[in-house]
Amino acid sequence: MTAAASLLLPPLLEQLLNPVQVHWSAIVRLVVMAAIVATLWCPPAALLIWLGSALSGVSIHTVATFGERMHASLGLVVWWLVLFLPAIGYSAVFVPSWEKDAPPL
Image (cartoon, rainbow, N blue to C red; front, side, top):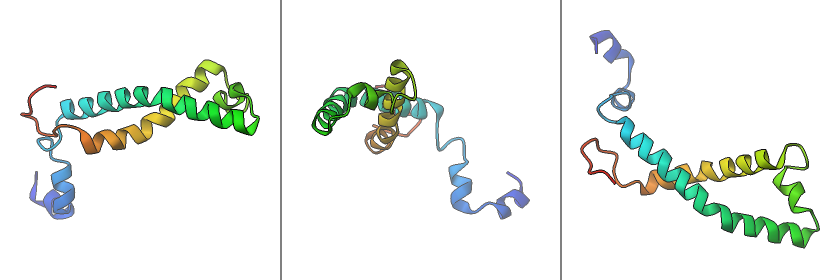
């Protein structure tokens, strides 16, 4: 990095942009772990959604399709993505290691 660039970037930002600090395999592991966690959260979430829709008198199809605004299969993908967002945070906390030399899972 040049001297001019190091004067413009704060030290923390420079450390975050360092390619040695974050390795792509760690990011891939994080995303895979988040996908597994989101998939495991689907049955309990579906049970809670079913119970909530049964108690409120709303059709489960209406809930799954966001008020009949999309096809049912697309609605399930969107619900999985809704579960995937908090799963990324969960996985970021519990990912085994961010180091490049970490042993494979």
